[in-house]
Length: 217
Image 1 (cartoon, rainbow, N blue to C red):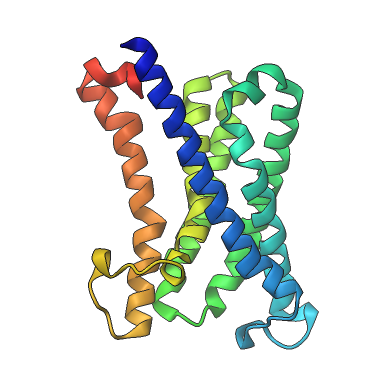
Image 2 (image 1 turned 30 degrees about the vertical axis):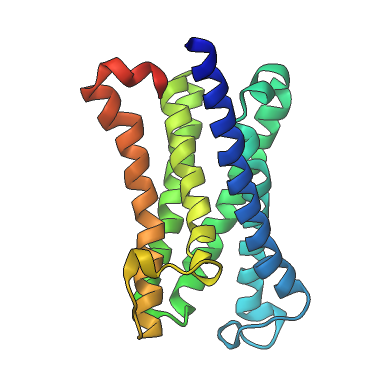
């Protein structure tokens, strides 16, 4: 039974990370590559040293965190390549800093005015959770460090997930919303914060109230 449970857990992890990496790749090709190949939103001005500068910072920071984020959670890297884990963690933190700085500017010029608050909060939570993860590891609080890194990476994936509505039909979640601004607003807030809530339920609510299944989380 334990062997079957172990194999099932391994398969789940492979499928989970495959999905995350695939979505990240889709986001990278559809947004980062598109920008450097000439796509320019009218909201970002016509010259590099306008809002495009902040967009480039955002794309660089986002690329760093998307590439390095998964390596922070894979046990075989943490155990066998600790120096790389630490180096990648510092680079990840720098990427988060670039995201936080750039979002502070880009959020206020977003074409979706109701989304500006959610974008600002998502950037703020990404920076704050990463800061707490760093502070936790300094005092060797491994559990808090891991949980804060989970929160940080979920915030990073939030910027990816809000684009999922362009890839998959999400009417089964939100119903048919004709107004494109309202639809995007619902999409932004849902994928920005619902994953964080689910993470809290899994990391804290369930272990504190259902100790019998704590060892499986």
